[in-house]
Length: 147
Image (cartoon, rainbow, N blue to C red; front, side, top):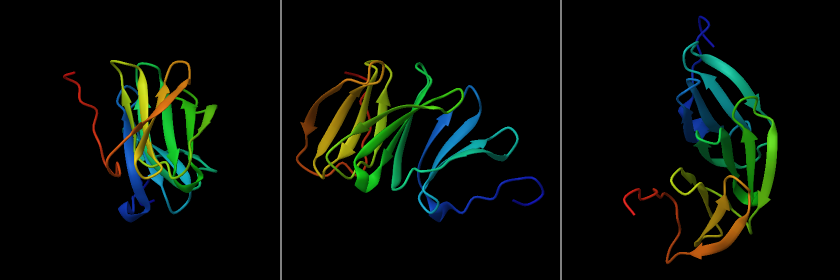
């Protein structure tokens, strides 16, 4: 930190998500194995959630006020409350969780894992549906909002 402002080494971060209402940015800090929460208004680190070894994907479900975090090689997706960041649930996939996306229209969270699969989580109930098999790896994907 310099002059009360946070300086971010971007090579340490893999994915990010935004809580626009609270003006906070969620960063996957791969070096520290932490979920870093930056207060954008104050320009400084607000909180670090430790124990997120292999952190990669992050999705923020604004309508449910929940943060979904994919933990790489462990195959885990941790869910945190968006107000106080307390842990709500850990969901296990086969391995290598990576990208995480949330669809507010369906309340589904999609988690890329196991090379060629998307895990599907009901973000309200945490129920897990059968994987969506893919023809290739989901290194990056977007939710189509028109269908």
